[in-house]
Image (tube, rainbow, N blue to C red; front, side, top):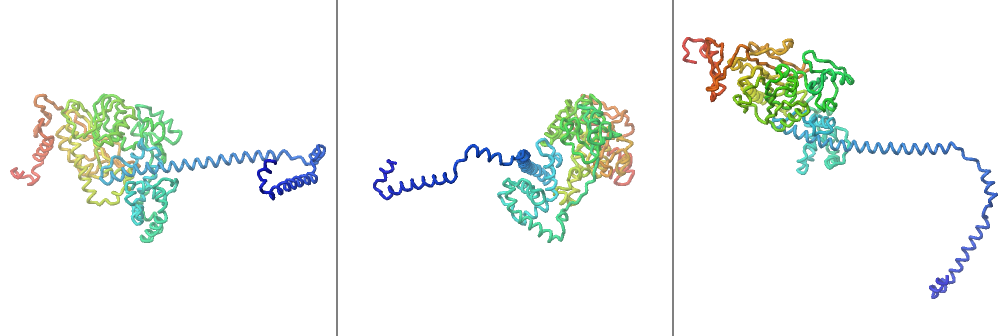
Length: 566
């Protein structure tokens, strides 16, 4: 206080005010104490005694309420976590779907697709397969509509051109889909233009005079449910164990013709099943499984799979051969070669050698291939028999294809198929050859077989009848087409074609080291084609044609006595 007075000495009016304030505050405290005296100990005890005791139940209620609050907080936290997880999953699924869509559209534009939509989605590199598959299929389904509303709103600027496929995926998901997780830069950009896109969509419906968006879609296909076929890899598991395992989830039926094939009810997605992931079971259609069984290679044989990828038939051959012998799997496309190698690795087969190259470049006279006894030829084809399974109806080319363009493509494929089959027939020790396609077109099936029949006959081959109990045979376009086999989607299967060439048992072909001369025995009274090392294999074909003309008469002049016109 003295210190304060010394400091404030020059200001006497303040000095006079401070003591008066101090005394007034002190006086007020004294009055309050007098009015409210401190209760004695006895009065406190009496007061507590008069108060009603708080029941114990409210305390328990408070505990319950606290517990409820904790549970609610946990639920809210779990909801937040699940929502965050769903948003993250949606974010990454869009990126994976965009990568698959990019490959699909580029392959479709060049007509050189490395794999089908399903094969790309269910490759090991894709994690969220179910969401990715749904996004890709739905985006392709709505793609014409998506492109039109994007063009009308002009949102695909140069900045976003490099992410065109991701733009398509995101537009579908935000405009037509669930709109989950819009935190990415592309998602935010599309959300900003959502009203413009929806307005363009509404105008499009008015312009086309349709009542719903579904009416804008160009492809309306109803997929009929088909049974799920499973081929058992007998290199890893026996059929009985597989039947026992899959009986836990569905009714299992063993196929009557193919002993290693099981049939399950439609609608089961088994891509993530442990037996599928470890290669004990492969998801393979029945028609595709019929090819290797038709070839029927024996254990210890040397076999060529001419166009092997994705490898399902290759590893089926290995299982039928009980892992013994040697299978040479040829594949020209690098991307498909990797898929083939992954399939072989998963199967556990150790008798398969994959060769990166064209089957047409394989030299039949090379020492490594002189002992090949069976060839499975499943060349590139139009895939018209499995277009529904491959989802080809979703591709832009399916909409734009004109009959003339499609016909040119089929003719080009048929030319390659014919060359590949002629090449397979030229192997000196081969005994059995299967030619198969997943096409329903006559040009790729019966016409190819008919064109090589003279060459096959001159080399001692004849058409055999795979699965005689099968009713659907080849189209009756030439004598002997009843030996051919067809399957059809109406049978609940893929559309496939299978032909089997077998060398006649009484044909003995002698290969002489000096001149490498092939002499066809038992050809009395007819022209015998001779094969020289440097002569084209087409010599045999033309020689056989000449022999047939000599037997049947001149084609040009209708059988005149003089052959000058021929």
